[in-house]
Amino acid sequence: MKNINKSSFVFRQLFDRDTGTFTYLMFDSVTKEGLIIDPVKEQFDRNLQFIEELGVELKYVIDTHVHADHVTSAGMLRQATGAKSALGENAKVECADILLKDGDELEFGRFGLRAISTPGHTDACTSFYTEGRLFTGDSLMIRGCGRTDFQQGDPEKLFESITQKLFIFPDETMVYPGHDYLGRTASCIKEEKAFNPRIGGEQTLEKFVQIMNNLDLPDPKRIDEAVTMNLKCGYSLPLGHVNEDNFTMHDLHQLLDKLKPTERVIDVRTPEEYNQGHVPGSLNIPMGNENEFIEEIRSYDKVFLHCHSGLRAQTVFTMLSMQGLGNIVCINSSGMADWKIASFPVEQ
Ligand SMILES: [Fe+2]
Image (cartoon, rainbow, N blue to C red):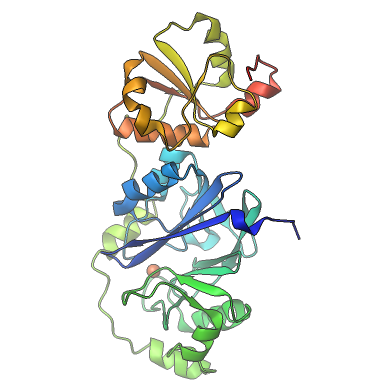
């Protein structure tokens, strides 16, 4: 067991009212590394603003499965932040950066998110566990479960997934589903084992299959668009909001002596990180604070944005580009870490 200061685990539950979809953002407040589960396309701006204001260095954008009811913003968030996209290996989503197997763990700061393969609603359905919380997607829902009548749905598999992979967690484990349509936000294993009308109360496989095969639900309204787009990681960001500079800290080092007064290096790390050593002459505008300085940033002919490894710089770049700034060179493939390794001059 790692010795972790639990108070540094930050967790936010977000909601898309139109589709009843929950999105989960979590990060380590010390290292700032984080991830997001099931982001909805229509909420891209809101989610990015959260990520940005909270200073999250987004490492992973995860989908619990190939959704049929909404389009993911995994592709857009990946472009916006430099995060890697991930989902279950059976999803056959070729554009994903990471295909997760049962038991795989994604690290964010001092925490780990464990993938638990829970097929049944779809083949690729994956639940996730971290810090006493299960994110169950459409496998287990509050007093319900995902339907099994399309997209490789299989009630027998879903029964096995819920009873053998999820109900084995301790009673107090919190359950955060992919959806709710009745205003409920979370449950726990004990409550679902007791009160879930489909699979709780020691339900038998036979009765569960009978219930699932007789739900007689209409298809989701947007199933064709949603599935087609989700197999492609969703939509892409508009050009101009995508960083294509390929500019590195080594390039910056070469330019440093030649910078004009109207050109500025901006370090978007925290003040603590900045105070431990920064590029000589650079200005510290911590991620999440750039709106206060937007007119100053706009007034330069050119600004060079960097952070520690590139993820925060790319996120700030996207935010500023969305507000119409076009004078930014974003260093997103490296950062202060590489600068220090190269023994370039550091100011304190
Ligand atoms: Fe679903």
